[in-house]
Length: 251
Length: 251
Image 1 (tube, rainbow over the protein chains, first blue to last red):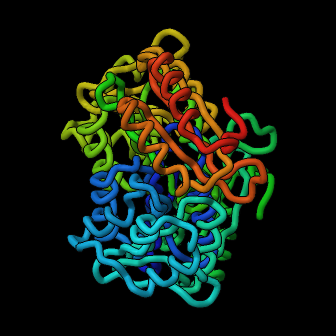
Image 2 (image 1 turned 180 degrees about the vertical axis):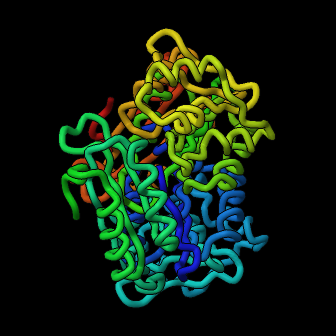
């Protein structure tokens, strides 16, 4: 596959850490990652890494430390519930070397939202890493806890999606523009043309995706940039390089 | 969520590294991870980590190094094609500090499978890390290159699935047995019962998965073990601990 990142252009980077033994064991199929991919793409945030890890404090902490140092935004999914094996908040604290402390504002919100829950449960739910920020306001009724560049979202898909939608404005930059062509030739046949296009348009993000068993085409080629005119120019250039009749469809 | 790993019992561990800008950017929805989850589970291999990384040599190498040192089996998906940005084989070599060399047996197979491809392409496809093994025989016509405990599979779903099915016998140990109960009570209400069950059956893998918007139940509880009698005994014990009428369905 051919692809190249437009390093020169400003874009925010993001990593997603999905905490979930239930996903690793196949009891639940993750949908949060694919949802996040599309939502983030739509606001011009480049998702660079997705990791699914087990519900183990040290494993989560290690991954949070790794991602927080490399990406501008880190989103975690899952492990923020009331049971003793929900360890994401503690793991994020551990990753930054912070203590867990009770947040008085969060305690009031927890008590108001979950009056029927046992006191021990409510006390646990109000614990945050020292220095954490609560994301509230707008469409967010129950807060998203944030420490530095790490946002801790719930794993239940409906809640994850609601929270991510509500946070999107805080992450947004400018969107990508994409065009695509479907080519009825082997990837190895058109590799030279793709490379030539990249040489002419070095900031282009160019992808080629071979398919099998599709009667219409053999490779989908995608061209992306945050500059619409740039991607249009590259598209026209590449079309001109392709073998006669090879491009069967464009988008 | 409550869950606990049966550390005392022997099980093979596995990590999956999915190489794919196209997945991170949402152009393609990954299906290989979910396929691998179920296949590996069926043969008793514990998948402990799934990572989706960009097509960057250093990033892939770093992840391969991390996983190869921690898990018994590492599977990579994608980045093994003929274009210059297919860098998985080179990244695996880099992870182990090996040179890339031409494998004469692989060169013969490549030349036979892809006679129409350019010579430069065929030469690249026969490069492997020094010391690599070719997995051939059985249902595998075109080989899977293996270095140490790392198996490099193609990313195209149909090929990935064929290869993984063919390799399964080499990975197999013994399967897990699972039972499940659907409970119409809040997770916080039954957290004590779940903990009590784990104290009595410490080797049990116990999971609780809250749902929203299902009229029938609020939490799915799963019990797993490689020992069928053990999981049955734990299941009966937990049923006895549950509030009257709370369990609405069992599997």
